[in-house]
Length: 264
Image (cartoon, rainbow, N blue to C red; front, side):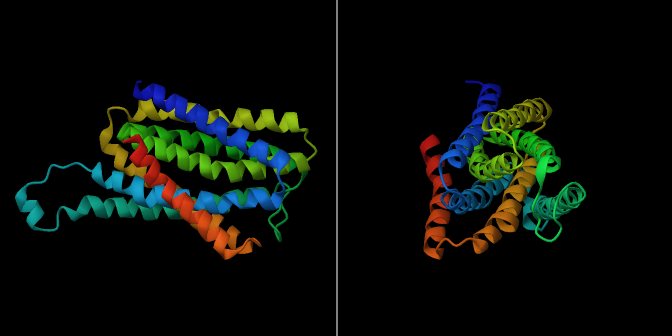
């Protein structure tokens, strides 16, 4: 199976699986039951970023230094650059999130509660979700170009964090008066943008391996930011027990290395 085929299948199945799983949960389970998925998603994202993606990014750095360079500190420069990219990515995602909140506040969002309202907010959510899925496709493509195993675990992390997001999208669309069928089709359309992102990532990054470490670092930054800034604070506001949340986070953390061993 070619790398391009794996990327297309991963983006297609990843986007649709998260959307279908979210639809099945929100249409059948209680809100309290589905909220437990947040802890699992946080564990998967942190594990994927810190135990898989970042190590792969460092391993992908060019190895062209001679013994004299190794004797000094010159070999630290590429690693320092990756840490700078990681920091810039975290701050950049913070700025993007604040921008999204500002835009929402002018289009049907209660500034005090952060809740989105009605038909005005629903299209904004779909547009934002489509862009997010497109970026996920780029990240999946970068991961597969670096290492197929990394692509699988990155796809798993994307699916894990997309399920809670898709749950929120379905709740919003249903609360806005959309039928289940209309909400399902709209979310399915937005999820397909991940395939476009995967194709663009493949043709833009194939043969440009020197950029892979930086793209992977940005991918890790996005996972870390979502987990730390969005998912973990949400767990503090839930009524689920700390023990249950800890178990689910632990399961999420263990899934990534287990999948990596299985693929190898």
